[in-house]
Amino acid sequence: MRTLCFFVGLIVSLDATAADEFMCNYSGNQQEMNACAVRDFRKADQVLNNEYKKLMGKLGPKQQAELRNEQRAWLKGRDLHCLEAVKDSEGGSIWPMEFNGCRRDATEIRTKEIKQLPTKN
Image (cartoon, rainbow, N blue to C red):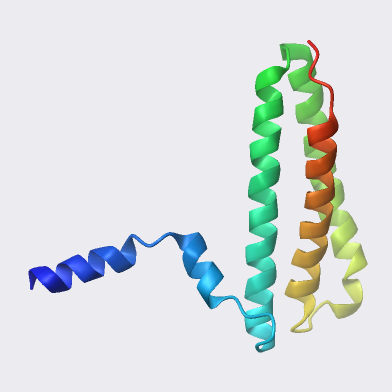
């Protein structure tokens, strides 16, 4: 019984990212490719969030407020842009992959922009 509990605990404690890596298959069926696209977007979003937080920590209060407003507007614009970009596949099984791929690409570009922003107070 203890052995069973150990293995159940081990399985439950596995890193979700590692599980996503294992299950992702872009050469699989559409559902698997959609899952991969979601995973890839989430990774890109996490990298962006980390860079954003690092930059915010280097800015003064006024610059923080400006960056926060800029980032909120960018997020809204990104999602609206991607909705428009993939509207032809809306309702189709490929739509999640295209939408999340668009968001991933835009997020990776924004991450590069964030890394290049000045940090002077």
